[in-house]
Length: 329
Ligand SMILES: Cc1cc2nc3c(=O)[nH]c(=O)nc-3n(C[C@H](O)[C@H](O)[C@H](O)COP(=O)(O)O)c2cc1C
Figure 1 (cartoon, rainbow, N blue to C red):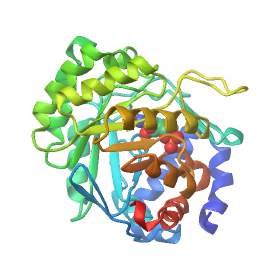
Figure 2 (cartoon, rainbow, N blue to C red):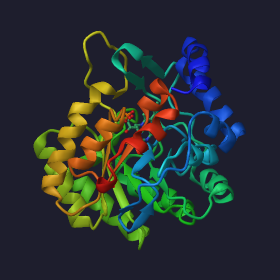
Figure 3 (cartoon, rainbow, N blue to C red):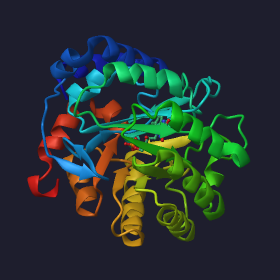
Figure 4 (cartoon, helix red, strand yellow):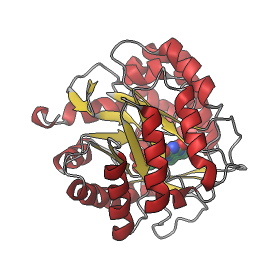
């Protein structure tokens, strides 16, 4: 942990989790690359290809940390190999009532029921277009607005895709957040096959990923994998947050971090079997170089990190990238 984050962490952790997140993000936005370098970032390279995209390294920023894309220069300087912004919806929306974010440091976990608060897809695209530089790989994570029924969800995903067409290198179809009522039903084979076919058409040549929940049973997971294959999607991001709970943790929403690691690993193995050639991004409880390496060894093309970045601090990213064996990436 960098000295700077070691000083900041006790202050941030005394605040309400969402306020601390907003403060950290505002600081990252203002401090940009210089702040990131002070916190341990550095341009490490372990080049890897993901669905035809050239990543500087296989460690990415997971969706939801920077929903509106405000701190791209900071993430770049921290050493991430690619960045996923969003979830964005076509229209801006406020998300669920507060409080809606929690920390469980003793479990290495976070909880949230944010419900996609975001400024809308067009605002995200405008901001990222100003900040992106050559060599950045930007993923845009798409959702539907809360008040759009599942029967019309495809229209929302396509509208958010169109609004971000110019800036996205890939898109992720988020059908796995537990915090938008009904959203996870889109993972059923019938919904998903139709939805992905329509979004896939709109995505044209750019890769489309689907982000799945860790709480699908084996049959549901295989169904979702079949829908990915049949619709011509590039690959899968697995997993989103879970409704499962370790003992002593209770809140309404999705849990992330260490308690998710075992299930996320298992889902990765099953997807690798079901989709032998598809690029897979493994996310959920990646908290250090060993875990990241284990995911790559189990067939992930890349990994993403969210919770451990909050709990361990930004220097973690450089540590993970530096700890990967050169052959694997
Ligand atoms: C506060 C918070 C907000 C999140 N928001 C989103 C989101 O908007 N879209 C999404 O696809 N995933 C979202 N996620 C899920 C993460 O991208 C990731 O899949 C999950 O947290 C597991 O990774 P981790 O264990 O490294 O945190 C969010 C996670 C957290 C903790």
